[in-house]
Image (cartoon, rainbow, N blue to C red; front, side, top):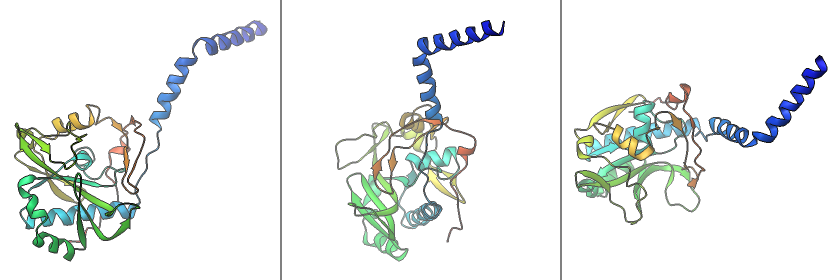
Length: 248
């Protein structure tokens, strides 16, 4: 009797291996995605990002520069109440009408006094600590805050780029999604953002933005990362730490 059972088991295994290999591969691929590795920034760089966003938004307010968080910073504010744990830069938009204030001597002097520098590039501006970490082949330093310049046209925001190739056209706000601006909790302080972020997040990141995680860019080295989606866990929803202390 035992011999018959053993024989049946052997036959079953052979049939399974011959007829279901593709299904197995698919399941293994899915399993691999669910355990995909993310690159996490160092603790000191996370704290520098929080400090940078705090410092620069205070300077925006001082110089009456209207801004609102976007990109990964907005996603972090909505989903994590702070930085995404595997994010390593900051994203804000400034309307074109205030761009001249960004390049004014007054604003640059305030930046320098606070230990920051500003650099223009094809997608807008980068603000970074003067003593930040150098990035090979790039003029700015890490970590940094990205400023994208936008304008309101046809009842929506549009990025103003010196490069005609706009890969972020989906990442826009309708005017009534943007205004009135409101405050968002970001770690231990608050920043300004759009009134209704959900339309933007759905268009920019896809409707699964609240259930998956992935990376596409390593800002420390300015290099692309293969995009591999995996399941967002309850633990993943916590904000990046340390969130302080923030120097005020």
